[in-house]
Image (cartoon, rainbow, N blue to C red; front, side):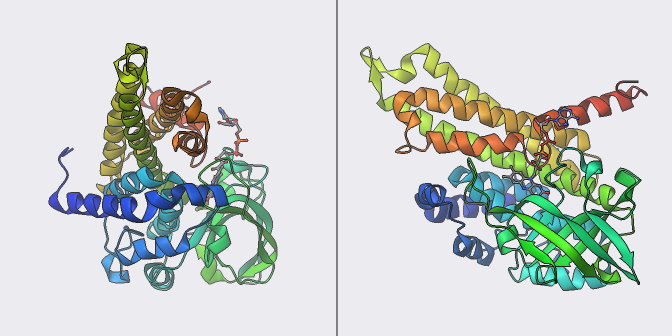
Length: 385
Ligand SMILES: Cc1cc2nc3c(=O)[nH]c(=O)nc-3n(C[C@H](O)[C@H](O)[C@H](O)COP(=O)(O)OP(=O)(O)OC[C@H]3O[C@@H](n4cnc5c(N)ncnc54)[C@H](O)[C@@H]3O)c2cc1C
């Protein structure tokens, strides 16, 4: 793997950094306080070519990879992790389409996305998140199409989505092999979106429940073949988990920025607190973790872009970066002392924003399950047997 970024990658990183400093950082505290989704700012980022990077050129996109998306996500997350999560959400839909879309589906949906449409990705349900095979949304055959019934939980960008990728059981008795993916329009009869959920952190990224009651879709809505849903979802996660890891890196970099400035200014016992080894070492640890997480992230992204298996690398990156970001944010609050507990300073927002990095797109525990499974497979064994 080439560790040096290309000129083009450095250019896109500079563009994302200046956008984050100008358009995101100054407003992030207000968005957080008001649970505000800054649609206009995402639209301006879209105008600059900072969104939907994997859309191929033939559909009006720039056709860049997971590595470039990770580079942009890190810079934007330094400004606000919730903003970066919302802005990169379409990528889940784009990768599902690239994995399994027919020419007609690609033509229709990629052009809408490249023109600025928002979409959402509906896998999780109130009763099943980590246990994907346990989803209950049902797609029952009717004529040459299907009728969908069920509900989806925690669907990021659902309040604004024009259309959804919805995962549903076409064979309820088959666990993961019974899942299929459907492209469902927001305006479909029987589909409703709940009010945005009240969240601990990442409040600039709206999430909501999606309810489906007898939602009829035609044969053109099926993405891939019947029963392909689980395979599509895993393909997507291999490409989007490195982006979540990059958001974690951006959050850690911001922790470091804030903590170093504060620790050099704040004095106790006659010296800046950075001079107390117990404080200085916290900063050193955040720096080590950020650098290690970035390397894991970029390797996972680089493998994905080369079409090589990266499930294990993506799990390393997601587990390490998510957990390290949480540690970094807790330590940043600690470096700030009492004022770190106040919304006057960004430390407490960083801590609240970090938590979900250990939860969405596969929890830290699920990443470790994946790692154990891959280790056992490499040794010709199955875990737990
Ligand atoms: C802000 C936010 C945004 C989200 N956005 C989306 C979205 O856009 N689309 C979408 O489909 N989903 C989304 N999600 C859902 C998210 O992916 C799930 O919450 C996550 O996968 C965990 O599922 P769960 O909440 O059902 O927890 P559970 O699966 O019930 O897990 C509860 C706890 O048990 C642990 N656990 C469960 N099973 C195992 C196991 N086998 N081994 C070890 N530990 C285990 C988990 O790690 C966790 O700690 C979002 C969630 C949040 C909070």
